[in-house]
Length: 333
Ligand code: ACO
Image (cartoon, rainbow, N blue to C red; front, side, top):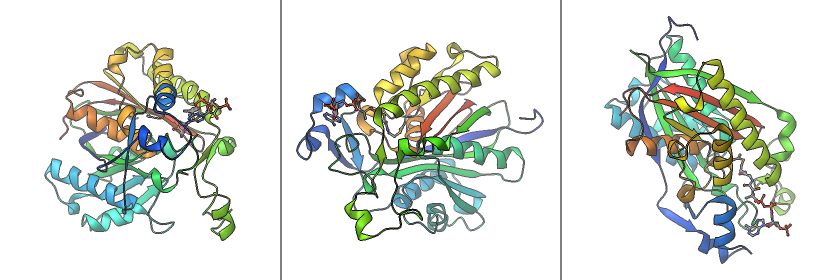
């Protein structure tokens, strides 16, 4: 990034979580599993479930919260980006629905699909419009209603996911805070490891696709597990190294929340002390594009993010996609 360009800095962060809690004990009543197994293998105790509302509802609540925290209106926004794999509809984008509901009359809007890496991809994308000087304020949201695409009868996936959304407001930095650097990757040869096959142009929705349960998320759990640990550690270390930093320089590491064992193994590989690793998976489970901004917003509200702090975000997800972003925390609302 050219040193003369302003950095894109986070000036507000927000999250939205549905009220309804689905505990492991609740799931014990529907599939052959146990609270003990789920906690031991994933670290998850409960997840939030959104009833009778689509993803845009959560994303709009986040956008409204960002405007409220910053004391601005929808008209002050230039671009809205929503990372999601559970859009309300195939078309239009969920971002356009948010744009309308917050009265962002001057903003353009689009969705970005990179599954669990969606927020990191979207943050980096949104930041380019700030750094280039073309936009003043960009809203970046990660939102997923995973309960809409999770098979409640599949014990290997139904225990893992929850619903939720988080987001940030990006503006030009007046100091050295903001997005320092990033590294993003994709490998489409991993398509079969993690996907939702039905409902697109390959398998348009039919009675058969519904009967074959093709509209639900499927994964090769062990393959994804190993890939996640290896890639999150690798990309995070690579990004630190090229900025002449080490994991010991980090004030907070915010990894994608897929499994507590994945978080622990990644942190161990990188030798980051546990107290500098953000984890909320016990209560939120995996909210896909929502995990990183929800964790960031929680950390901020808990006072774990102070001006000047060095923060690293890292994620891996369907695509396969993975990446990391390095930030200097500024003054946020
Ligand atoms: N309850 C009880 N037993 C179960 C359950 C369950 N909910 N699910 C699977 N099992 C059984 C399996 O059938 C298997 O039994 P078997 O040995 O008789 O065949 C046994 O438990 C072990 O199964 P594994 O799949 O090897 O269990 P593992 O320790 O790998 O845990 C898990 C499975 C939790 C899915 C893990 O592989 C994982 O977290 N993978 C990452 C996947 C992920 O997070 N995907 C989300 C999207 S991508 C992302 O966010 C990065």
